[in-house]
Length: 405
Image (cartoon, rainbow, N blue to C red; front, side, top):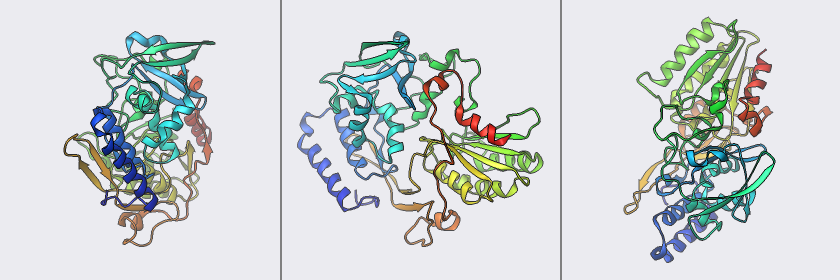
């Protein structure tokens, strides 16, 4: 892929080897096999932005799962398999969940946290499981544990996807954690359906929403799932309005910016917000940025710019983000002529920890606006357990509230 600049020489050789193997075996490949070969080739870059949109080519099992601190759990399932809700997946066939994660890694572009994030969807595709050696056919044997009992269950491909699936596994995988609306057609039951009080993080997708988390309006909560505008009002105007009215006029003691389930977009939409917010806080006020494995691309950049603009008043809480501070991005999509699969290439280098000074070597906005000499590691590292999630607890937000108070 000559347009992509993220490959080093060794990665180019790996890329060509995967392509050569695919060509040699093309006659016996299914559409899903070919899609996975394309994705595996892209993943040899080790770069999260160099990837292929293969979701529509892959079938899914009738369960959706997420990695928590204590394992991989079923959080949603179709009506026929709702007894699996809350079960921990111990094995796929003969492979433990951890062994399956290792085997699926070559098919996923990006850092270890990006792999952990996307693998939650990859590992519930029978096509992927067949490719990593779980079994020879479409039927998958899961070993699950729930309520102190361990059992095996046989799963076949789902007849239809969950409404919120959106053609995973390379799109918004975090939607696994958010129950679909009760009026959604063909809705799948969800672990959180019976939880009365939920974290505001597990709400419908938004580019920006705000709320006060205390009756005295001292703690402002801003949630964003997209750095692109959703709706008629541009995102930068929404954020500007929040800063002007709720921050400058409202003078909160703390602002919590929740970017945990934000895959990115166009960071030009948040440059003004991220540069201004730390400087406009009242004396002694602090900004608490919530991040996680789904925080990626322009969302990572937004967190980095908030940290870079900090006047010792910005902290990060949660998991490591879905990329390192140095990566290749931007670029464009190429549609493969026969399969129609879109492959994204990356051609601009960005560094949000050491910083960039040369617009010839780095993407120019990184040079102009990017921070230098910061760390993107969470100041407080928190990976929630399944028990916390299923009970409606949010230890990441709880820690933020402790700091805010």
